[in-house]
Figure 1 (cartoon, rainbow, N blue to C red):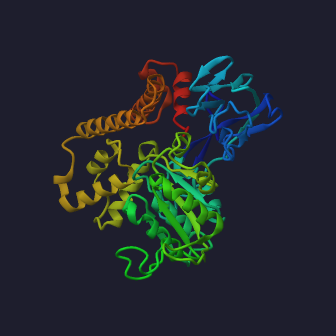
Figure 2: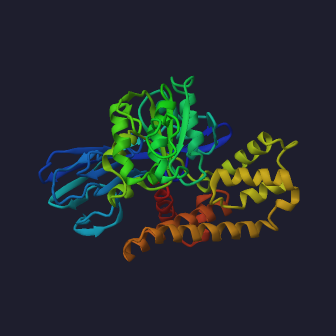
Figure 3: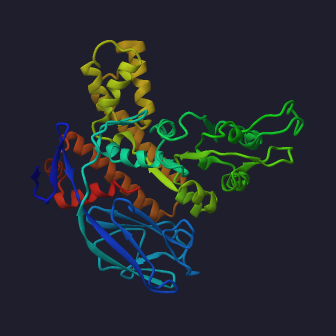
Length: 450
């Protein structure tokens, strides 16, 4: 093992030099207000992200009437505590200054409503090297970002709690849900998928809970819903953020009581299912803005896994490209020129888009390849930048918050691009960027937040 200039320990795993970071542990305590004495501890591992507010889902729950249900989020990132206001009504103030996004080092005070919280740095500990595994079931990836997830996935699979999988479109949420099912005690039982975007709104309730013969026009026979179909096994509800508001309380009732009632029926049917839900939306924000029920979110997000986008999974484009090439019937090794083209692209469509690109190359040969690496990179950058701007505009945020979010997204894209250009060498990347290495590392740390 070796130590670099920042005092980080490098550990060799399967020929790859990894960094075992020193992680700060913070305590946040209520100093003034009705909940004086309440405490939350964040260590960047088990308790990496904490919500503060009046909602039951908040780890630090306050009874202050001037505090929003989800007021702000806290996350330990290396040596700092990241504070993000979640669109609160009365604002979040650090040392008397209103903030939407801030990094703390300990010793600060956070004011919200009539309450004041104090931030204390408790100390530091080494975060152990991630697992050497390169996949979890159907989910493949040898990047540090993925290998950090595998132990959590194994732990969740061994339990029977509800799970919320979050991530961009194409990151492999359904593959992960299947892998959790196959690694669980329910593996021999059904795995049933319900896609909230695929069922017409008028038939969604019937798809979920079933119907009796004659319950409505066209109901020519009794039909079981997906809850009954999944009895004894796992029900995967994809794109849960798209669920119609009027169905959310009915879904909550079914999850809480483990029973359903078919449309047109008068009998309660007991069901034994494990719920795994997935979404590309920010459900915390959806709840805050009243589009998703707080109590349903609480029931579904007992365990949470966020799948990183492919552009943040260093080295996984090559790993996945070779895997898809072999799995789809490619002869021999993945052509080197094609691999270069794959690695020059930023993959806004994530793993799904990469798989399609490999399939297209196998079917069409050189006709499927981009004209040049630069063209591929430019197209990827343009598509990704357009997607980022559109996504922020769709949120209809106030101008100051939209500007902050856009700047944060730009910093992430910039750092990823310059790191790739310099082969992951932070010193060279920072020098070419014209900024100090310490500030460059601060920007990198921001990439690890939600």
